[in-house]
Amino acid sequence: MESGSGKTMVVAMLVVGLVIGFGMGYLIPSLATPADDYDVIIARGSIIVGTNSGWPPFEMFNTTSQTLYGFDIDLAELVADYLGVTIDWVDMDFDGLIGACQIGTIDMIASATFITAARAAVLEPLAWYIRTNEVIVVRGNDTSLDSMTSLDDLIGLDVGVQTGTTEDEGASAVSGITVHRYPIVQTMFEDLASGTLDAIFVDEPIVGLYGETYDVKIVFTLTAPPTAFYIRYGSPRLSGAINSAIAEGFADGTIDTLIATWFG
Image 1 (tube, helix red, strand yellow):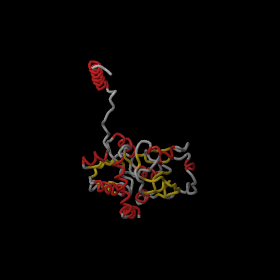
Image 2 (cartoon, rainbow, N blue to C red):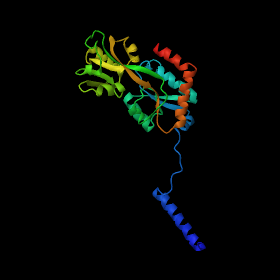
Image 3 (cartoon, rainbow, N blue to C red):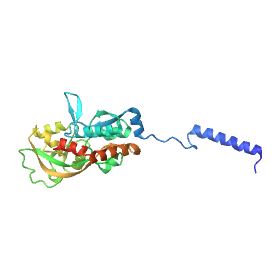
Image 4 (tube, rainbow, N blue to C red):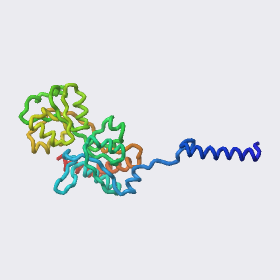
């Protein structure tokens, strides 16, 4: 058994150790728990959602009303209603969405974003809500790719893609394709129509709207990965709430109605 003076010395040493530990930033583990983004969003009263307009019918911009509209816009509004908050939209280049979500400039991505291993390595994909196709599109009078069977048939050609998309990744993986990257999809269709590009590689749903303006046709189709919203990892309450909103949207038929409205 230690004497009283011995105990006093031990206590004094512990106090000194604690003080030094706090000053040096070690010894004492942090008791703080990182906030779930759900709590931050609810306290703020709004969720900051990033998108890239000009990708119909998922997300478009009405220049008259200066508002976003489209399938993803409506679906994100459904999620916000479920959370009981409003949406602060950030319209930006698609290629910047992942980084913006990682650093917290936006809380969620709603921009026709496929689930891929590379994206899932840095952000959390939520419940997927639709699956579409990827397609090769050429001018309507071009018959050179009518018998296309694989992306290898594009070797030696100039092919347009939207920057940062899975189509960008797919075309870039084929040696011999000259890939032209576009932040704005309409410019890509303009260059196809003018002959600057031989073909473009895009999501199938957007061809319908641009096909009303440009004489184009689909010559090759690939099944695309599922589409989902993305958030940062580490917020289980937020991911759970958004997934529940999507599940309920399917259960009550709301999402099926949105699909029928926007995709026919």
